[in-house]
Amino acid sequence: HMLDSVAAAPPDPILGLSEAFQRDERPDKVNLTIGVFRDEQGQTPVLECVKRAERKLLDAETSKGYLGIAGYVPFQSLARDLVLGDLVESERVAAFQTPGGTGALRVAADFLSNNFSGAKVWMTTPTWPNHPAVFGASGLESGGLRYLAADKTRLDVEGYLEDIDRQTSRGDIICLHACCHNPTGVDPSAEQWDQIARLTAERGLLPLIDFAYQGFGEGLDEDRVGLRALSQYHDEYLVCSSYSKNFGLYSERVGALLGVCRDADSAAAVTSSLKQSVRCNYSNPPRHGGAIVGTILEDQELTELWRGELTQMRQRIRQMREQLVEALQSQGCQQDFSFLLNQRGMFSFSGLTPVQADWLRTEKAVYVLGSGRINVAGITPDNLERLSQAIAEVVGQVPVSS
Ligand code: PMP
Image (cartoon, rainbow, N blue to C red):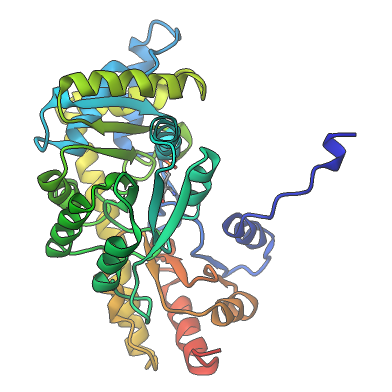
């Protein structure tokens, strides 16, 4: 027997908690684990701009024939402009529609592994757990760089820069979160981005920028702060962008891979090499998600509608951050949680320990990750009070050091 000898893979810790949440029969349970946006009712709705684009597509679509290897053509330039704006001339960019941000990362990783054997990918500690997994699947070695200060709520920029300076080698790759760092919510400031961009260029590193949350931090343009700094010092980098969160298109699998090159000739060669990576992965991307994003961004009215809906999502997350901090203060919580206001995007490192996370789950049916990561978008006006009571109680009862 061959299949019978296969050992089971370790369970995914996030999905495992979600399954436990589904099985939990307590009616007032609260799920802050999984990484999707939720509205005030706790739902993950289809955006109105998406519904309208889909109606248009249904009427206009005449064929389900294959897309090209690089995807839906209008999507390629629209995604490029959304992500890069006027930072680089368009002829310098190799642009691909990919199955989600994960698809972009995997194609990028295969491309890097094919072209730069021996290059190592450097990541923040912690990072999105799928980063090392995807790079490893492509045969790339990866390493970690210090990112957080000891209290896990702030950036240790000196430590980060020192590790970049001491550990990396010329020709290595550095994986950067453009904004809304997952899992911590801790982003560099504009000045810190400038330091990071300057040092990574000096060290001869190729930036691989994961842009999964454009518009979830401060705004579509504001969230390009890191890209802006990087493009001042680097004339080559890769961006893996996702439309799962900002268009709410999670299951449609739509993302983009943008290869910013020195000139048009280099972009043409990079495009041909990336096509090879796509061809042996999934051949060409699914049409529907890319066509939705393309239809919205091509149409001024739909784009306005989308921007409004995105602003609402961003503001709701911001409000929940503020209200959680206020509620914890008014519960007389022994710990100051105001650092949550400096973190951005859907996630935050709350500083809660694995023991406290366990207690919250077993005693209060409040589900947070063992790392202390919470999905702020899982907080609603209905569960806010229960949640803040539970956190205030656990912070008072279970010693932080345990
Ligand atoms: N990068 C990061 C940091 C993410 O958080 C995510 C989504 N959880 C992705 C990439 C991948 O997004 P997608 O669902 O579009 O593949």
